Amino acid sequence: QVQLVESGGGLVQPGGSLRLSCAASAIFSINAMGWYRQAPGKQRELAATITTDGSTNYADSVKGRFTISRDNAKSTVYLQMNSLKPEDTAVYYCHATIRYLSGNYWGQGTQVTVSS
Image (cartoon, rainbow, N blue to C red; front, side, top):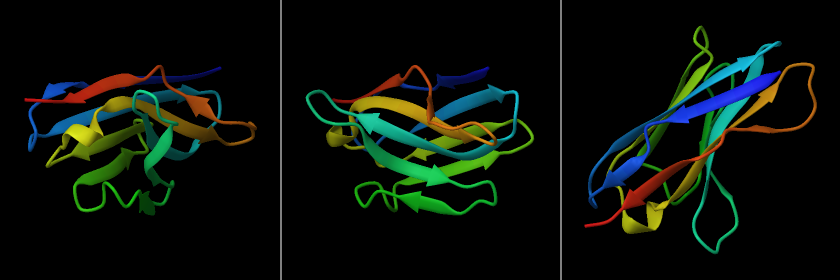
């Protein structure tokens, strides 16, 4: 009914960049989309969200370094991550809400590791 498929994670050195992508498929239109992350031993936390009209929200820890965007025609959301730090290491999860459907929908997660 709803599927979110992430790609783009990997290993990068501090100061480097990565771009995550998440393609959504659903029987109804996609509302808000976003990226959350979960580091080992920590709770899942918001990284960035974006509405259908392009309004964005960022966690303070990523402001100025991460940029979220979306292509509504492709039902895809992106997260451009620059100036990566070791503390950005986490599993990153794509999130979406769907018109007419209750609840939250999640991707399978993609690992981002920032290490020298």
